[in-house]
Amino acid sequence: MNNILKNSIYSIPITIRVTLWYTFFITILISIMITSSFFAANTFIKTESREELTEAVHKLSFKQKKFTNFDDGIFFIKYSNEGVIIDGLIPDNFDPTLPNIKRPEVKTYRHNGEEFLYFDAH
Image (cartoon, rainbow, N blue to C red; front, side, top):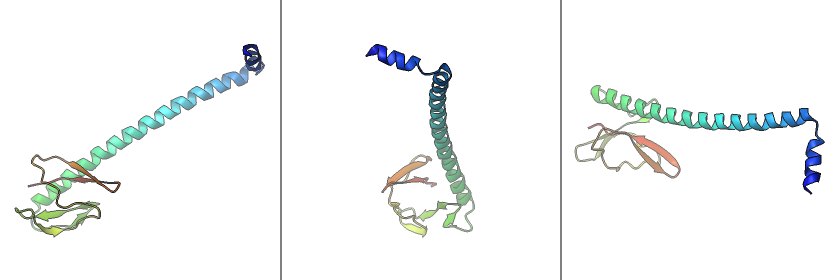
């Protein structure tokens, strides 16, 4: 049985065998590169989204004259000191009663397969 397998492999021309080996290794390398670039892009997008959110909230909090409900894909909700919604738009599947953040950091909220980033500026 082993001899039959060896003979069948050695009966294939060397050019085809080398081509198959190169194809196999190139496929593995390309798969690794695509996977790593996917994870790197995903990390970059999350970092950029967090930075964009915090910048937008800080701009809005310093610009007290006019409150904007929605800007560039970001929903804004204005709360009173008691936690009651005064103004703003609430996206679908988002829970507006989430607890306030004690530290200024971006939190993630997941509901029904959707992911929301939220940031509370006191």
